[in-house]
Image (cartoon, rainbow, N blue to C red):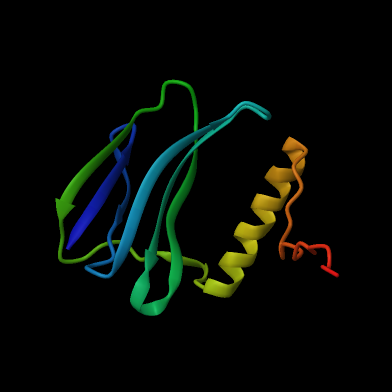
Length: 121
């Protein structure tokens, strides 16, 4: 299967892969307040409807991350973050959009009101 070998400062961090039904992602994030940097390796196993994670590791100045794309017969075990739930995900997206709209001073009309036309005589 296609997999990611992740190394931190030359040492193996994890080997992440899920086969042919889903995705894996690896990314580095820096957050200025508080000053934090970390690497996440996450994915979705579609057939089991699971969001999964191999690692979330804090990084320091000078750290080096190497991601190598490989083909492997076996990979490291992931831990389950949560079950994929389309309805909950839609509700989560709605909350995000409402919060963003509020921060811009926008108003969201969920069900547009029908315009009433004046009645003719």
